Image (cartoon, rainbow, N blue to C red):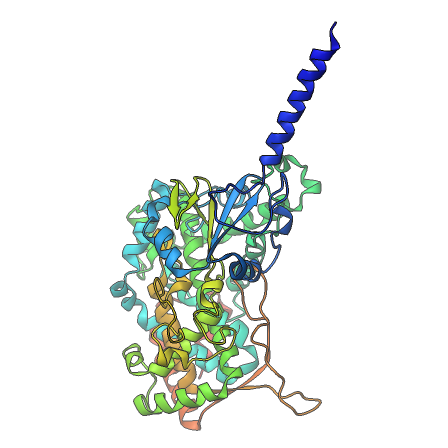
Length: 536
């Protein structure tokens, strides 16, 4: 046997194999720039395991408003320029309306959770149904219960100010749950609320980019035995919790319909009119997306609002002067007052700018190749809209990491003189394109109502240290990790601005009882007793 040709053939095969492997992880010349890659792995080892938005923003300053990462041969594009968001995600919306495949998410949701679902007929059906139910006009129908819940929040913050973290969470959940399921949560200790947020904590941790093994990049990892793969138990546990919660809501509404006790909730209409057919999985996924998205958006904003106000006495002084002139102290603000309160508007916009609730948004999947600014975005690319980077760009904002509401008094978008505003808007925090938040009108009403209420009702100050008697500094950058970020618990001093304000809050809470009662039929005896006793 002639060994030389065999050696040559084998050597050639090895060389070709090595060359092909070396190309894996390499950034194509037509792709947007980005940090250096390593053979095979690409940028896998440098992908941030927590607070990805901070690293993405750092890379954006170095590589530009659109940069790329390679995860093996899977491309990721991160956009931190509003002009490029408009060009790709809005103008080319049909090409990026899909979501990336996620084995982890599908293990929990069977692929029918509206926020993460692929661009499919199921997704279109569920989203169209919610869009019709959550137009600006339709959301006005929910104002009475939203305003009643907001009054209870004022009462809770006035009487138990140290409990403002769970109380703001209760408000956000109760509004979303009442609109969707027709049953409210009157107490921050409500059992259903505790179950829901235990699930949310685990679910958010699972979704944090880089927090779990890269199953979609290395599919063989899916077959690791459960005893060595904690993520399998975590997915199963979250799925069990979601089934228990969301099937429970469906059963509750079915009983209400059967007993002719409908109270106008969205879920009653979905079930009675079979708007999603009999697909229980799709119904669960729609419930989850609405309830989780609505609760997160509002509760995170309220906590950030309190944190920023506590850090900024000057902003409060200006807002108090404005709201006193427009509203006075003998009534609560209403939604129609907001147009006459430009400084209150500026505070709300600045909170949303400095701390967008979902800093890098939910990723998009490219289904049609596009060319943006001369760079090719191939099919299969994952696209992140880096909201934090867009809203903290030093080319667009003076001192972007500082809370300065006045920037929105002198500029429509809070930008500095001469800044390029192409593609900018004041609703970046809701996403863009065909995947923009479907509940944005409801969330906007909740944020507006509470921004005005807080500024009308309270003084927010740093709490005093019991040992020294000095104010405890508040850190406006102390936020949790996760796909949605929240201020970590902090202390502040919340006090009514006057006895007149306090008395009116009590009066309005008692007047709201008839509104609450419509949504309290399924409460436990203990919850019902608590609800009736509030403010009495």
